[in-house]
Length: 404
Image (cartoon, rainbow, N blue to C red; front, top):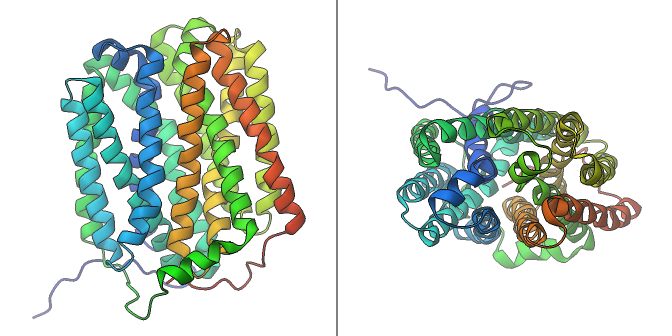
C-alpha cells in the first residue's frame, strides 16, 4: 500500500521547480499589502479620522517592520526548515491583516501593520534563497525574476483590485480578502516538500564576515535611496492625481494598473539581464527613474503625461528588488539568507525614509508635487554608490556557490 507524498519543490534539469511560481503568489500577496495603502489613503484617513499625510505612516511603519524583520528573522530562523518559516510567516501575516481590518483606532492599525511587516520580512528573506536553491545555478536568476514578478503582478492587479474593492465595500474589506488569500497560500506551501540542508551551517560570525567588503554595502546603499525615492512619489499618488491632475477618484485603479504594468516589465527585464549586466541595468534604471520623477513635477497637470511617467517610474523602480537581491547573494555566497534579508531591509529602509520625508513634503510649501521632487532627488543620489560599484565591478557569476 503506497502512501501519498507531498509534491517536491525540485524540478528536472532545465525546468522551473513548482515551488517558484507558488512563492510568486506569496510575493504577490506581500507586495499587495505593502502598497495597498497608497490606493486606499483617502478612505483610511477618513475612517480613522487622520490626515492623508498621517495615514501615510501606515506605509512607513510597514517598511520599518520589514527593515527589522528581514535580518532579525533571517538569523532567528536559520536552523528551522524553510517550510516552517514560510508557513509561519504567512500565518502571522494573515493575523496582522485581520487585526488591521478589526482596528478601531489609527494606533491599533499601526501596530497591526508592524506585525504583518515583520512576518513579510521573514518570508522575503527565506523565499529568495528557497527559489534560487531549488532552481539551481543555471536557473537561479530566472527563478528570482519569476518569484519577483509577483511584485509586478501585485501592482498590476493586486493593488488596483484592492483599491476598487475598497471603493465598493470599504478599505477593511480589502484587508479581509488579503487575510483569506494568505491562509490559502499557507495551506498550499505546507503541502510542498522542500529540501533542507541539515549539514554544517556557517556560524553567525562567519556569515557576518561576508559583509566586510565594501561592494555589498554599495549595493545596499543604492537600493535604499533608489527604492525610497520611487516610493516617496508612489505613496502619495492618490493626492497628486486627484488634487493636481484633476482625475476623478474612480480612475485611480486604472492609474495603478498602468504603474503596475511598468513594474511587471521592470521586474522581468531585471530578471533576464541580471546575470550578465547587473550593474549596467541598475544604472540605466536609476537614471531613467530620476528623470521620470523630475518630469512629474511640471507635467503632472496632464493626465497623459502623468500616466506615462508613472509607468516609467514603475518600470525603473521594480528593477531594484531582483537586482539588489541577486547582487547581494552573489557578493555574500556564504551567507545567502542574510544577504537576501539585508537587501529586503535596505529596500524597505528606503521606503520608510522616502514615505516619511514625502509626507512632510506634502504638508510643506512644496505641496502636492513635493513627494515627486523628493523622489527625484533621492533616486539621483543613488547614482553615486552605483558608479563606485561599477568601477569596482562584481565577481563572476559563472560558477556560483549553491546556497546552503
